[in-house]
Image (cartoon, rainbow, N blue to C red; front, side, top):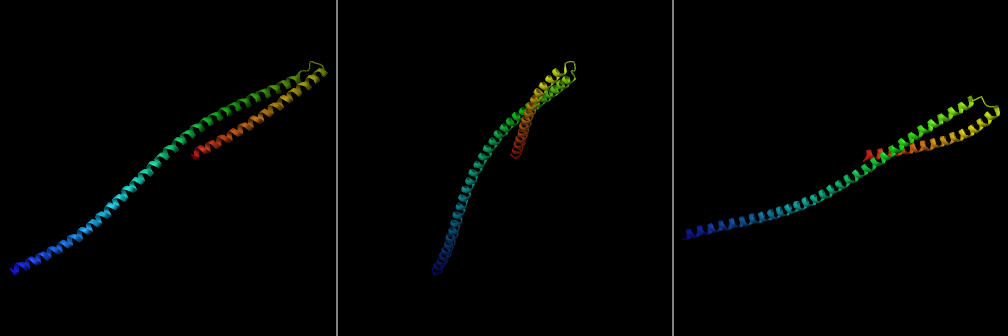
Length: 167
């Protein structure tokens, strides 16, 4: 009986030690599990934060693409308008050059006309010279203005091209 009691006491002691070990192991496992849960929750929050940041960035990209498309469209329209103005200016220069050549030919024809009297020729000549000089002066002024406009338009086109290339 004593032997049985001793065996029971030894077995109880062994069971108690195992129970303490299990409790310590369980406590360690519970602590590790708690840390694991906290880490998982932190990672979920971080993932949600990243998803929100990604959505914001996607929206910003879409907005910027829309703005870029609008600016590109308006720049193309402006370039088209400026090209039209340049074409008009070139045509105006051609017309002015043609008119100037015509006036020079008329001046030469008047010089060669010798059938009239000297005073008539002199009076007509002086009158034509004044008229032609006024016309030439006017044409030169128009040519300067149109050349200046053309240079402004070309500079503006270059600036628009640079802006477009930068975008």
